[in-house]
Image (cartoon, rainbow over all chains, first blue to last red; front, side):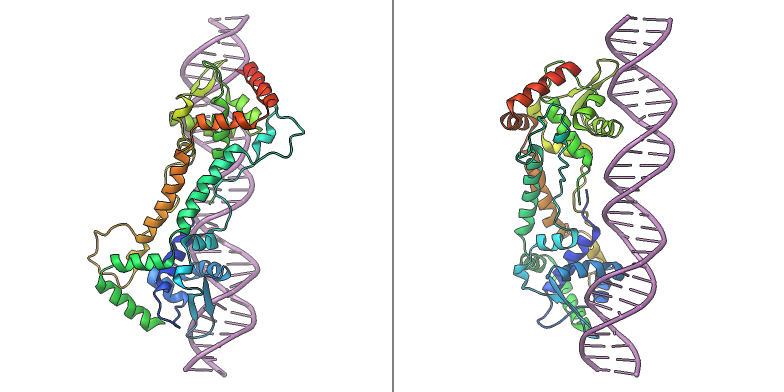
Length: 161
Length: 161
DNA sequence: TTATTGTGGATATTTGATATCCATAAGGAT
DNA sequence: ATCCTTATGGATATCAAATATCCACAATAA
């Protein structure tokens, strides 16, 4: 069970967009170049983010993407769900119904006990992802990345947006 | 991102095995019949549980599987990891290395910030799964399943083990 | 007008999940 | 001894999803 690589790409792209000066945008091509990933496929992830209302695309030269909300209003979970979908990681197929000893008129039961436990774990995962926003990420990156690199990135982005 | 259906099957099988009288076993065929799943494929899940030391198989007529440990010593996480593997749900491919602005001599850095957050969420998921054992499951099932059904299951298992 | 961009559809390729089958060895029953 | 049942593990087939590319189109700025 692995998340798609598009999830990783989307998170990194949002991290970069979160540091973008007001009014600026970055194109799919720039984002793909920066991260060294295929432009055409990354485009699909960006479209998913756009559909989810996390980023906002605009057409034409000088077009591109920017965040559609303030960084503090976008959680990791928002991004993961936009790209990966919202289905739970555990799918209960109700195999308890196949139990030969089960009364046939039992129809209104609570969710399968096993599924409930698995879903609680799923919710713990989501809760942790909900707890970190792009603003938090920006703060962490600012503290961890060498000042020299941050300066170069700002210049690179400035020339491309 | 979905867990394999074998995870669901393995959990249900372990739940049934946890209620097995001392010294009794259930065959792959019985477990498959009880849950209404393909015997040959379920067998792969049971083999994974066996390799992981969660269940113990024995050959010959009257052979089959039983738990290799007390139910309180087997967590949901043990079962999930036995069937699904232990890889983290988020794979970091270190795309930050492709960053054109990154200093080339940076080699010894801490794990990627984004990966750290994703891994913390993964750990929250695992922690929740670690917290529930087969003994807990047995207690929940005993409280939720109608007494009539429990009695029938005990009889069915008794005739097959 | 022209070049650039996002959007969405179609499609190919590769990987993994799902599933079946068979050979083998071992253990009970007769 | 013989036979049936069982777990084990390998080989293989089938199907769905992830990965990736390409193209047509409309919008937009220079």
